[in-house]
Length: 285
Image 1: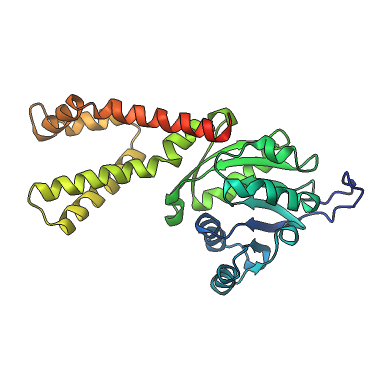
Image 2 (image 1 turned 120 degrees about the vertical axis):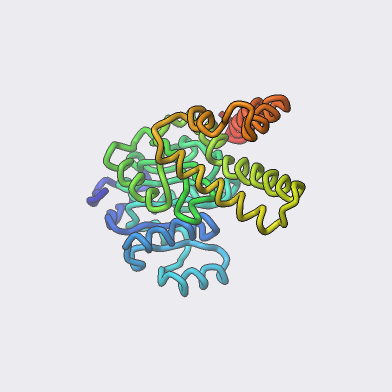
């Protein structure tokens, strides 16, 4: 992503062009800081990063911790090659209206605001601005996030590849059509909560079986961590990995049979479907 442009904006003003290294982050909350931290850790210079955070105490903390600039949204996006919008969905319309006259047509706007469609940005920004919609999840805080990204109509392969590279500093990335974003939200966006829900039940069950809570938590944490690593490193389907652990009439068989009797599998499927429907309702899709 590079270069300057000399095309006048609709209001007649001349854009200043973009600095290919400059990234503006609009929103200094948990996810904004998570990405900021990942960028710095990956070797990006703090001087190339600028954050807009409306709470001065929070902005001062980010300046002190990362050595970055903080300023208002309109100033932050000037000359930025990539603009990350990491604010609450209800705040997107106002912030896009504020930055629209200042975003260079050669820039890419990356939205991490849940449920906000690409059209909401493309309708407000100058022609040529590439928009990418992304659904993150909370494990990005520890560098193990999952991002589902969808490119807008003006986003070419080069711009998309740069966005993917940026997000990979915080985890893994899957590129999907925008119409699949509700499914992404249901599977990975909300997914960490499903795992925590399972962990709660496993810990409580361990306590019921006689373990102290600390031991039950340690056993559960490492079991989930190890199982996830095994799944990630294997080419086998989850069903095959499960079968390998399930001896006929053994302890695991007893547990899985009970799960089936209680409809755990269908309950999980129904929950994911419900999350996808709710995501569609919230985004108006």
